[in-house]
Image (cartoon, rainbow, N blue to C red; front, side, top):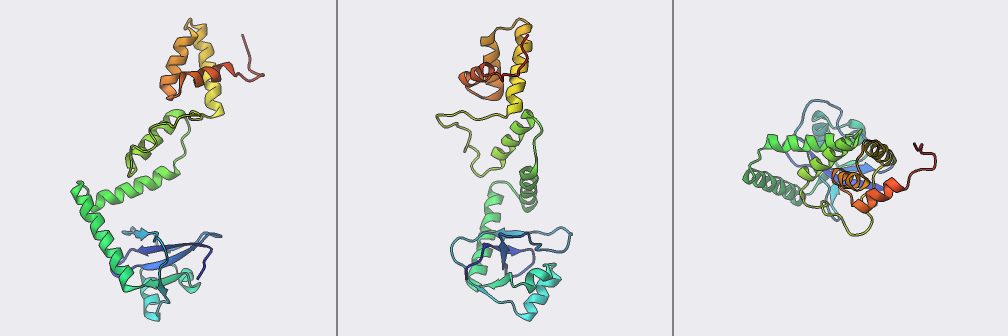
Length: 211
């Protein structure tokens, strides 16, 4: 069947996972309890087979804290034995690989929690933006990805940062520092090409106050 949203395999109990349909048109609550759980989830690739929940299965999921409304609306399905077995094998393989990398289950939970908090963190300044980017690289499966800038247009900075650069440049020039040194300094700080920094300093807004 076609569904306007996505399907996820979810489990925080002992036993087979379930398929939960997440509609794209509205937010849904999957669990109606707030106690800590060991959540396991996966977005499956390709087509998956689901079967309607039995009465006993609905009662079991409700006891585990799954939202009754989600079940009543028909957004939860049982999975085939093949898919449940594959889900377990992938989990066991992930835990085994984590141990080889020196990580235990608590470490994995801390990493997942850190990624959640990092995703919603909103930096208030350039230093925090750089710090967030650094942690994103560190927590990424491919930490080297994204470090090398592609040829062409340089990384953009905000209008507030451009204005800050111009104001700092004015103060440094007033203190006797020459433009070439200022450009080199900002280029290192912001990890931008000198030509781009120079263009920012030259393209001052018309309403910028000049001394």
